[in-house]
Structures are given as structure tokens and as C-alpha cells.
Length: 214
Image 1 (cartoon, rainbow, N blue to C red):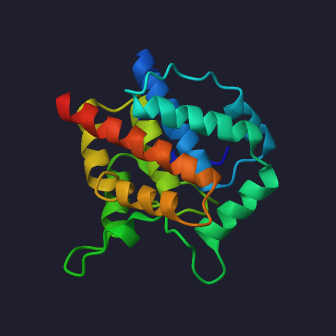
Image 2: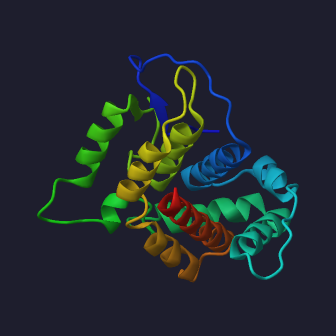
């Protein structure tokens, strides 16, 4: 899968850390979302998502329902149709229907440009945009990949502390992701990605609530 972020060459080498099951699951969801927002899923990825187990859904866990809809939607989705949907939604001709960059949703004329501040923050953590990667660092795909690295670590680096994860999430994702997901889900041309956006919104809400009680 394409990776939007990578450790810089001078990032400190650290021993691998055994992840708790919850953190492993979080990292896997961030990885999946990073992949889905970075490019349209091909047929093998749709098949892999569709082969995932459904979660018990008693009607009281909205995330379970959203996950099950994404799984079932992946089982019937046509890869070519989803690729066209991705193009129409996020690339477009001249202007995309939905913008996946944080700087679009958090513009403030009196503040430092969000992308400049983000790049400085990533550099301080030993992270940078991967060479040849198309998305900017504030693209939702790149931010999900960054969270995956913070949660699970990567080659040569251990996972970051919960406080570091919480701070990055609160600054770079929480202020805008709900509004972005709502825009995607409500877009008339969204079909498969309406399901992706609904799951994203609920997953990010769970992250926000979990960070609040840590």
C-alpha cells in the first residue's frame, strides 16, 4: 500500500515494542483509512475488507454498524466504479467535490499556515513526507498514516506515548475531521465513500473520547 509518511534518516533507532491488542487494532484501522483516502481501493483490497468478520451489533454500538456496512459494501462494490467515485470526489476536474486537506477546513488568516506548522511538528518527531508521495502532509491519508506510526511505531522507532498521540490528534485531526466526513457522506455522488466516511467519523469520535479519559 502507498505510505504517505516515513521516518527521517536521523530518527532514533529504538527497539520494537509489543503492542496491546487495542493499540494494534487502532493502528490497523488508521492504516486502512490511510490507504482508502490515499487512493481508491483495488479489487484485492475490496475483497480483503469484504472478507473481514462482521462485528456483533446490538444497536447500541454505532461503530459496529458502520463497520458492518463498510464490510458488506466492500463485498458488492465494483473496483472500477469505486475508482471513478474516488476521482470524482477527491480529485475532480478543476475542483474536487470534497477536499481531504486539513488546511482547507482550518484556514485562519491570522495564524501560521497549517501546513508549515505541521511540517515543523513532524520534523521534530523525526517524520517527513515520503519521497514520491503525492499527498501533502495535511492530507487525511497522510495524517492517518502518521497516527499509525505514532500508535504502532515503525522500522527504527517505537510507538509514541499516549500523550504525544493525544496532542497530535487534538491539533491536527480533531478540529476538522468530523466536518470533512459529514461533507463526504452527504455528497450526492458518494456511494462507497459515504460508508468509508461514516466509519471514519465514528472511529475518530471514539479516538477523541478515549483520549479524553486517558
